[in-house]
Length: 61
Image 1 (cartoon, helix red, strand yellow):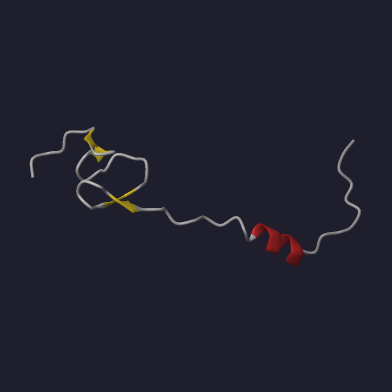
Image 2 (image 1 turned 120 degrees about the vertical axis):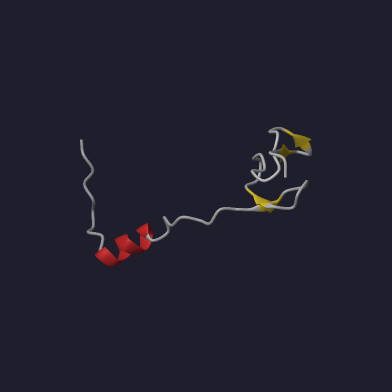
């Protein structure tokens, strides 16, 4: 059996429903070590720290 819609959905109603599938901006937080903006729950690309521990050795500055 296939789907048989009882009533036709207008283009406006269909497009209003689809309009909510928009992308959200990336959430950024400050690094606790260097203060740079980074994605939450990820290693900081600036200093290499995560959760106040050095995970990746950063280059000499």
